[in-house]
Image 1 (spheres, rainbow, N blue to C red):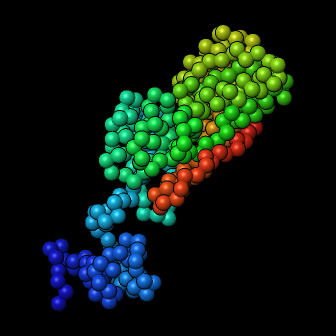
Image 2: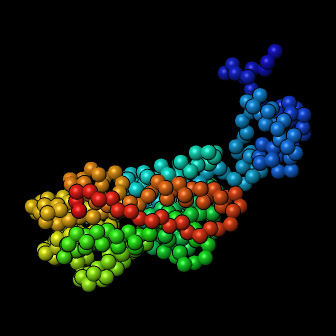
Image 3: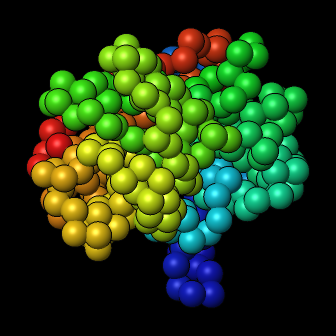
Length: 342
């Protein structure tokens, strides 16, 4: 008679039963289940058949003691909680990362590294809770790039970290300088004469590089590059920066804005002030996430392929965990999607 446990179900099959069914030793069965090291093809096949026949599920805690792996990675976001929950950039990142892990047993742990908590975050990563980390929305002052390099925790950044000149930093990104340039060039080619910009934060590579692209296009056209206001990639900052730049430079007839959320805030200000878009002021945004198609009017925007970037970062981290050597940065080419705002 089959032994029963208190809830009426038979006990879970054990590793010993798998070994007996497969006709191998317990240690061979364990090695076969945990990667097949020093196991013959015949023994591996027998163990896999026994696992399937018995419905055996490995004890994850015991397995981690053998492999020193947790089968989890951290998605580290050094931003306030409300930003993570409201910005579509982070939803796209989660989507892409989850897709890259779909064929593995690796799970994602979300780590929100609030301002001033970088040491605590790195301590968590170094203490073996996860096998590696994907870092997105990195700021200069969070110092996660240098701290992770020192910790030797496998990692990949989504977005160029500001210490990327150091050897060993792995990242995926879009060519943000070129993205800012083509956005501005689009406005120049359509005949706009006083083109301002709402730049992103200057403690992030995306903010720095998109501003550099705007400056490059303006310089090449022999146009003044003094009409600048700054935001932090949020809708509220776009609203405030639009009020500032329109007050300082009332003759502006076009704006390149370094994120779609900031551009959405600016569109609200332009409507408040009775300015038609694009008749009075044309607007080009950046990201081409869901908000770009839903604004009034819909935004012309530079594509930042967030899902593809996160998917590539996840694949690169898995490769690191499997012993692959470091690879060169992966840089996606930007594209412009033209809509009614410009």
